Amino acid sequence: MAKSRRFLYAHRVKEASLFLAPLLSSPQARADFVERVPDVATSTDKAETLARLQPAHDQAAQDLGFPKTFHAEQVHGSEIALITSTSPSMSSGVDALITNESDLLLGIHVADCGALYLLDQKTGALGLLHSGKKGTEQNITGKTIAAMTTHFGSNPSDLIAVLAPCIRPPHYEVDFAKTIHAQALEAGIREESYHDCDLCTASDLTRFYSYRIEKGNTGRLLALLGRISS
Image 1 (cartoon, rainbow, N blue to C red):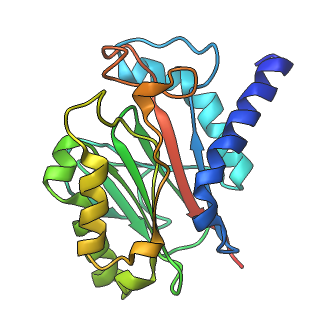
Image 2 (image 1 turned 180 degrees about the vertical axis):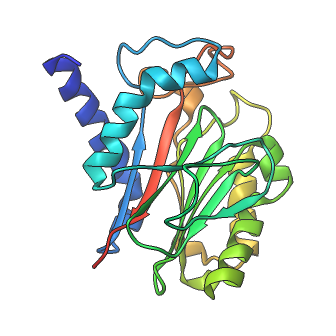
């Protein structure tokens, strides 16, 4: 990546991190949202495009202090994987990842769907999930919060939730961002602890990828969430 391109990329990452401030108020939390990577060619082949984006995505993980990223297969369902240091780098058949271990980085790809970050302020447990139209219909947000309660003893009222950029009306007829918000509150997250960046992926193709606007010929944005050892 040429020097000017590296500067532009770094600037956009810095700008993207602003909406993640509620998470980063926790000293050990690390989070990022990697936007459109300049001059990387896209195609309708997701695997092909992700391979082209891999160097930039790997660099983002390394910049946060993590050597690898744990991903979900993302099948537009509501299954959840509990991630430990011995988990595979790709968890099959799931759309959400949770962990209470430090030094693990969770990653979710999106290109219109919502990436929701969850941080337990008391236990340090983390959740990162992919919620589009189908996942929202299945209440993956509520299920992930419940899983954190079951596995880690999380109290939903201690969770911080942050919704990343996603497609919104009028570019899409379903306002799943609004529904995700409602589901989070219903699951016990406090209103003041829920944060929506209010950014629409379909409104700015210079910053974001949009599967709908680009008719499938698109890249993937990357949500990253982890916790380092104190």
